[in-house]
Length: 296
Image (spheres, rainbow, N blue to C red):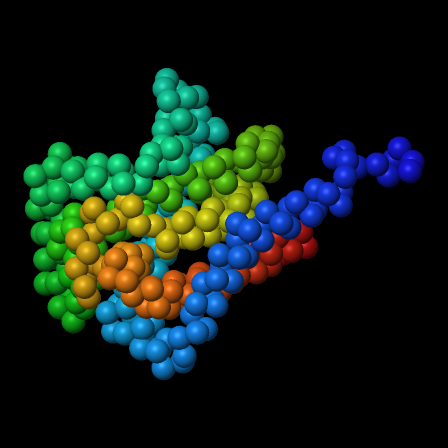
């Protein structure tokens, strides 16, 4: 074998075999077992367990809150990454390290901390709760045709806003750490050249910076969304877990497992898995189209 055809890592067949074996044991076999357990239920039993009205409402809460949290993280994650890359200020390294805190912090600890902060007697909830209740009441007076409490709740903790807060907390690092390396690769000279040619700041942002970070931003959004859909530990302490109100699908799965309803739990898990896969596939196709559009 010539020197130019040699691989950096020797033993391609061995490493490929180990990779496939590892992915099969860790990913494919558990997912295959989930589908196998679900396939043994029968269609009537599956639809009865997976599309019960309480379960359907939990789907709406899980995917709706995850999408809203990921969308917010996409906006503010981009701003945080921009500040960390383009500015120098005291305590920058501390803030940069704090971004990774949701990665290292156990989710149960995060849920307890958020519930203590945003509870009606918490440090933030004691003054923010009345303001939030007045805000929802104002929306109901302005647009009475929209059921604002059904979408926004009337409390920060132990209601729908608590789910949104927890999912935003655990999803922010995915966007920041995905966008940050891309921003570091963008040379400031490009912005200076655009300014020299007469471009405004908005035009520079729209035509130079945003197209460069858009694929990474979509990836961060997808990662944040996927993480939020299956989140349990940080949500269970702050959501309230009220059926037809603030109950998410992972909580319902755990409840069915505790009741030894394994068939019902696997049916809900299968629906969530398929829905998440379809959404991630659409996002990946959109990201691929964006890259081709930018290349063209």
